Image (cartoon, rainbow, N blue to C red; front, top):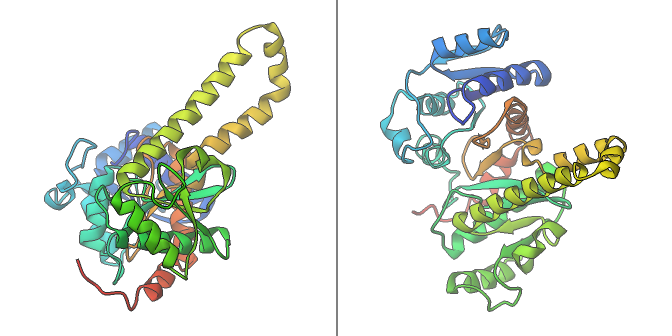
Length: 332
């Protein structure tokens, strides 16, 4: 399987992206295409003493920055992201991984790869490392949504959790400010009713923010604005807790003496809080695998995003979504 990687996207590009590509090639036996400024890619690989043998490089002289508007992927025709999308559309790779501008990746996947027929909006599905894996849909792609979008997010998320984690009937929850069926905005009240009436979903009702970590559902549905705030809050809380634990062990002699005995468990806890262990987040509803890695991804996270791309491709999720929405009205 061939995975296209935007080498210039992300806070740690190109160094960590290139190292991640190197790890993916050697540990996952993936065919890799790196897209970006070829001279910079080769210089970075040389500085890190990494061999690029067997890794294809496609030159793209321009870059989309994190400050660029989402439409930059349309306007910057020679940017690494735009060229990567072109390669995917032309069938010169099976999947695309990028750690760059989320809005630009969303626009690019919609314009150049296209949505599955019948899917109204694609959405970012992010696995949250809670008591058990929880898929948050949407975690940042769509600020404005309708009831129909949210129901489709639930349907796509359910397919994902069934195929990736083997959950036969994933429980779906609606992120809201209360558990009662009349809670929230008019949009969320009507969405609750539509989800309740959908016989193909295992809808368990509204989920409050305080209940997110405790496994009440497998798929948590919301608009991208709300979802991104929830995601960043949980990421921040994870870092906060680990910082507090570290400070506790540095506070006095007794905790310092106990630390060597607990080092393994603390490292395991840190991994549980680390969403990058699951790889990147797919744009659910796009007709080819497009995986969004975290903007601050290091090499290990990029490797895991490539693993996610391979798994997403080989499990047939896109085929299942295509069949699911085959009879849905294809309208804007």
